[in-house]
Image (cartoon, rainbow, N blue to C red; front, side):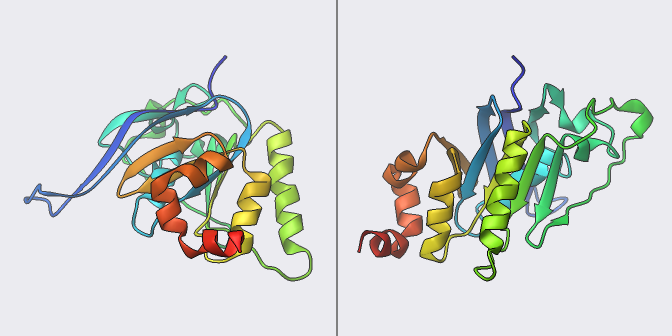
Length: 207
């Protein structure tokens, strides 16, 4: 069975400048998600979460490794069809776009007519008028249709954690460029870097 998302020995390194190759940031990731699911992602600001999303959608080129969506190397798919495999919504559900210098004639087709992986980057959860329930139903519907859904959330309210606990089946924690795959919510709370990151939210939850 072909994995929905296979991130293999992925690395992205940023340098100080064109001539000064001193690394200033390094992201590394290696994980596989086999089936449709809803994945929660979190981590401190500047840890590499958006960079990871950009690498998964092919809008950012890796330094090493590869990303395969439904068995296809996303960086070898036509740029005008990559969003048929993986699509990145930034905050207010604006779609992230990108450019490539490789002609599409030299790249392979997506082999899909509708995005298989949906990446929501800090979606705005409005507590008014049933908006949260509407969005959760939307995410569940995507999963029921056989899609893989990522929710990148920066929890700053207790209800954000409750949303993640309710809807997410597994998690990814990103810190200082290190990407850790976590199997469930209990394991997330047992992961010390995540506990330190969530801090007072866990205390409020236990109170």
